[in-house]
Each structure stands twice: as C-alpha cells, then as structure tokens.
Image (tube, rainbow, N blue to C red; front, side):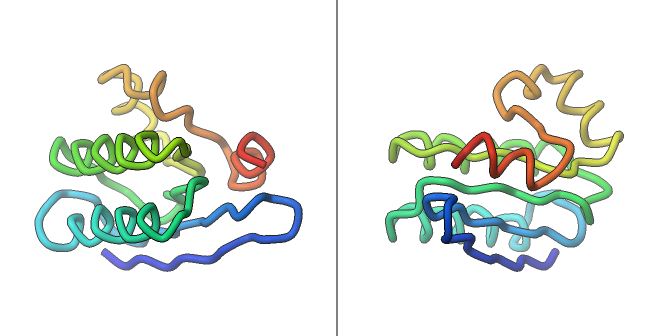
Length: 116
C-alpha cells in the first residue's frame, strides 16, 4: 500500500487529501495510514479526505484502522471523509453500516466542498 498526500490551502481551510494505492488489509502497511493520520492530527490538521480510487479491497483489519483514524480526527474536533470508493468498498461499508459514519463521496471535490 502506498500513501500520497497533498494539502489544499486556498479556500478550503487546510484540507489534506491522502491518496491510497493498494489494498487496506491490516499489517504494517495499513498501520502506516493510521500513523500518518495521527501525525497529521498532532500537527493540527483537522480536515482529511481519504481518496480510495486505487483501493480494490479492504478487510476487517482495514476497516478497524479507518475507524481508529476517524476517531482520532474527531477527538481533535476535525473530520475525515472517504472519496472515490469502488463499488466493492461501498458495498462493504453498507453491509457494516459504516457508510453512515464515514459519509462516502463520489469525488474528492464533493468531499472538499463539504469540509470547506
């Protein structure tokens, strides 16, 4: 799993987008996502979007990492959104009812508008 991040500053209030490439299935790779989000929260980032356009699979460990990340951001009075999830990932979020917690968006632009 690879992570890339970019910060949108003008007009967005400091939204950070994390692009994930690969599967979120636990282990050291997925923990790097959790670690990165905690570093960002500790540095004062409060608006995070996870761009999942290149994620094909996520398992229960990956969902747990997303939930822990969301909790960390919300405890810092911030918010975390998911964008560009595949139909397979969206189905899993629906089955687990996590789509009500994560508010998945069809695009990063939609998520940015909601956070800005």
